[in-house]
Image (cartoon, rainbow, N blue to C red; front, side, top):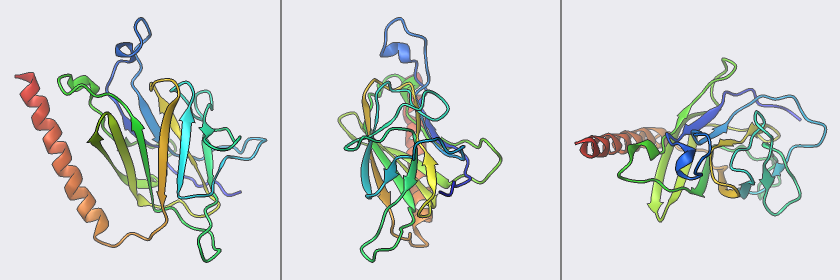
Length: 207
């Protein structure tokens, strides 16, 4: 099994977990994607469909914490996932983007609960995805999407979260469609608008 040498990609939540768990030590909730790692004795959980779900029983799971992830609908556990998606033409597929949908409460009157995303390198390698965005359709539902990169068939990626609630379910969607040249440009424009709106709301709240 090939391991993709990538940097961690994460989105950071500036939030004290004490707001959700009274009396506990504050933890900034974080979700990360990256690599590489030494292969464990058991096989890594395999992503065989473009839609999947990862459960974090403790809300803090990952290869650098307690390696406590569950691939929903299977008996497979572990926080490193192998791309084993086969297309209709019976060939291995490359993942060009990853999106995760989950429940998380953000208080619009409290800037410290804002959810943001960014990349973090751990070994000096190029990040697996160049960009990410955070959006919410409402009802405490959030979507984090990573684009501008690829995970070839047979390669693995990390999934790492910190500071979320117990039994948080992260619904994943993998796109195996080659992105058009203008996709990243449109993405960056939308990301700029999103960040500008966030900054404006923060200033208004501070007044």
